[in-house]
Each structure stands twice: as C-alpha cells, then as structure tokens.
Length: 628
Ligand code: ADP
Image: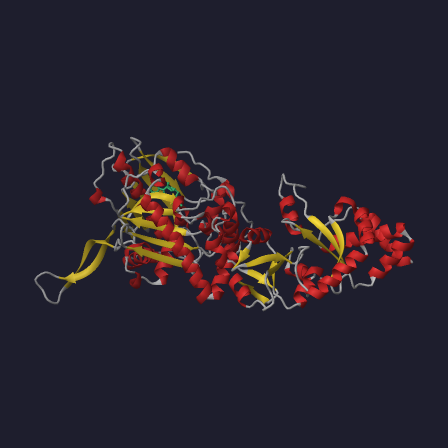
C-alpha cells in the first residue's frame, strides 16, 4: 500500500489542526455530521432524476457509534459516498487552497483566521483523532475504497469491503495528556450534548445506541442498564422553528457551522412569509467581508430549499449585487424540487421573494441606523463601500433605495453623518450641500477652497474614498439640495455686493489675468481673482463635471492613463499681498511676471496633491527668491 503526500497547502491546514490550540475542538463532530448530511442530500437529490439510483427515503440517516475499548468514534451515513478519484480529490487537497497565500505565523488569532477561511471541514477530525479511516462507496463505482491517514505523513487509498452505498468515518481518538482531554468524546452524554448543540436542525435522524438505566420489568424499584437506539436531533430546521423559541446563540451557532465562519454574524434576519407564496428565509450579515470578495471566485447567492431539501447551493438571483455579502438560505414549499437553473430565472415566485428579501434587508439596515447607530457604523465600516458602489453602479438605478444608508465624514465633527442629518442642520441661507474630496481628512481640511465655505459656517462633507465623488454625481441632489464641490469654479457664496466688487476687480485687471492665462497656455481654462480665499494666495478650481480628484481616480486605472482632464482654473486671492507685486511686475518686468505666474500655478497644483511639470525649475526659482 503506497503512501501519498498531501498537497502542500493541505498539509499546512492539517498541521494547524493537529497542533491546534483552537479551543473549540468539539466542532469536529458538527463538521462530520454536516458532511454526512450534505452527502445524503446529494444522493437524494440525484435519485429524483436518475432512475438508476434507488433509495429508501425513509431510511436516510446518520449513525454514530462509540467504541470505548478501542477509543474509536464511528460516524456513518448512507449518502452519496465517493469514488476512488473523488476520495483522492476531496480528502487529499483543499479545494480553494490555491487562492490563499498562507501566513507564516503560529499565533492563535491567525490560526483561527485560516481555519475560518477554509471552513474547518473534514480535516478537523485531526483536532481530536490521531488516525482517521474513511470507508466509502459511491453508486458510480462497483468497488468500495478506504482512505487512511495518521496525519501529516500522508494518506493511503485502497480497495475495501463495504456493502452499502455511503461513507463510514472512524476516528481514533488521541491519548489524553495532562492538559488535553479527549476521552470525554467517548461518553454518550457528551455526544448527545454536542449533537443537540450544533446539529439539532439536521434533516436526517442522527442515531446512536445510548445506554440508560430503566425499571426492570415486573419490578417497581429495580433498575437495569439497557441499550437503545435513540435519535439525538429534533430534525426541525432552525428556520422552521418559531422565532420566539430561538435564542441568538442558536442562530449564531447555526450560521457558523453552516457557512464555515469562525465569527458570529453581525446581524441575523429571520423572515417568515405566509401568503400567495409562503417561504422562510434566514439571512446573516457576516462580521467581515468574505476573504475572496474582491476576486472573480466570489459568488453571491442564497441557498435555496424546497421544503427542507436543498435544491441550489447559490441562487444568485435572490440577492442584488450590493447586498452580495449577505449569507443565508430560503426555503419554500411552493418551489418544485426539480426546477432547473434556467427555469428559476423566469420563475415569478423567485422574483417576488428576491424583491421582498431585498426590501427586508434594507429596512433592517435602516432600523439599525436609526436605533443602534454604533452597530450600524460597525456594519458601515465593513460594507459601506459596497453600498456606495451599489448607489453608483447601473447608472444610479438603485440610488434612491440606498442613499439613506450612506454615511460620510464631515466638518461637523468626528462622527459619520447621513445626508438627512446634513440637510436637517443646514443654515437658513444655505441652498446647497458642500463637499470636498481628497486623499485624507487632514488633506481636505488643508485645502484653501474649504476655508471660505467653512467661514460661512456651512458644513462640508469630506470625501475620502475614490468612489465617493462619483456617488454624489450620480445622486446629483438630496432632498432638492444640489451637491456642490467647494472646488467648483462657480460656487455661489458671498453677498451680491461682494460679487459685484469681485467682478469689477476682474474686469479692471483683464489684461493682466489674460496674460497669465496665455503664459500658462492650455494648462488652465482661465485665471481669475476670487473672494473664496482668506489666508491662501491661490487655489485651483474646476469647471464642469470632472473634478481634480476624479481626474486622479479615473486616470489611475489601468488603461485609462490620461483619459480625462479636469478643466482647471487658477484662482488668485484678490486680497492677498501678492496682488500688488503682480501688478507692479506686470507693468515693469514681463519676464519676471511670467516666472511668478508659473510659480503660483505650480503651488496651486502642489496644494491639490498634483505633480508639477518641472520640479527642478520650480525649486531653482524658489531658491532664487530666497536669496534675493
Ligand atoms: P467541505 O465540506 O467544506 O467541502 P470538507 O473538507 O469537509 O470540505 O470535505 C471535502 C469534500 O469531501 C466534500 O466537499 C465532499 O465532497 C467530500 N465528503 C466529505 N465527507 C463526505 C461524506 N460523508 N460523504 C461523501 N462525501 C464526503
């Protein structure tokens, strides 16, 4: 019998399991039972369409046997089994392992991360067992096969005797040590407790021979120990239980085992609908983004059950993209068992359920925002970006559904604000919603353009994520109030008087400003005086739909380099000392004037976080000025 090696990544996970400091060892049973149940589901589902598969649907079950003498726990099922090839594929490797770069660390937290990311699965057997034997027979193969492994050294596969289709897993428990006790898993009560705790909802009976003491027949006071086969689980799926009878711990435990997560969900949503279409849905918002969320591998979707029988692992039509992070399942007795993927796409009931589910998720989030702001902010820190993309994508088709779920930083304080909150505290003379975009809040605060708006006492939304400005562009307004970038050239602040005065100053200096524009050529659309600055001498503003931050974002995408150009305007603080100097130079020294114009333009660019065309020239000029 030749020994085969585990694939490198599997080996690493196996190693984690064997040397696990993971306190939750007992979950091995849940994992094996869950696999057994899935295997029975698969066989049952196949039998519906494949005439060659005959099963007795009343006899589908999972069995647990305890062999104290040999320290074995034996878990068997009459599910789909595995062919030799499947054994090799399923237990010799970990399916998704390639996509994850392993962290080289033995810290507990990281271990749990890795365990969680994979789903502990079959390998968790090695947390309690030092030898695992899997005997299995598939309906697709004449012969049965046996997989044996004692851990990291590898595994072997050979033919074996097994009459019935299904799988039997024998775990040989590790010996007890001072600190680590495994023997308790050989006690009936422990197994009973674990099944109740983790696997109560499993649809198939989980049976075990249990010993209890019973009144001896014909006596009233004599007891004897008898062994009886007992079903350990209630078999009622959690989502079919009365909501009032389910504790949050039960939901949490169900979620963690079902969706292979090592953390409790952030939020649980249990929907029960009776009516034209009746269904139950159990939805969870995980406490973290799935590790592969931003890869092509990630598939959104909910499990679909027809009256307790799983008919589809990931039904993507049940979730809109922007709630793609939601995990869960939907069960309806009105769905046909044999419905195909194609038919489902046109199924009216499915469309109605999807709509309701979407509305329910949204209303739960709105409620959370209203009633438990802190929880919502935790949620938003994880998923806010998804909601923003949802708002912006599909030409803003869903913007009205999502706009009230968005939060932004603002000049109001450290807390995130909703658009509604912003509008509610707008000043009487304020007509628009101001925002400013930049790489960080600190950088935005330092922008000269922010000054004047802030001096007026108006709140400013601070946009720090690339997608933010696009979101506001798609929204265009909130509650009738337009969004205005504080860097827009046509920003409307100041009294009529002030505006008149500014216009006069611009008109009076037309020739000089025109000369500056000529000097800067196509780099700017225009050069003009402004009253929006108080301390700073210059700033760049933009005209039209593309702001400087948007230009940076769009052009930073691969293939887009230089695709767009913001129409920039160089604005000069009309009250700054430099104005007099400029006027003087314009009259007396055109060459020097040109140089100053370029310096001011470069400064405005630097303030915006943009690069300048000729940094060497710029710094030479500055040095020249210093040494004057
Ligand atoms: P997961 O269940 O998350 O896919 P596991 O490591 O637990 O990962 O199992 C790997 C695969 O082995 C399963 O996907 C399944 O195909 C197969 N398998 C495990 N247990 C059984 C079983 N009792 N019967 C049939 N196949 C099984």
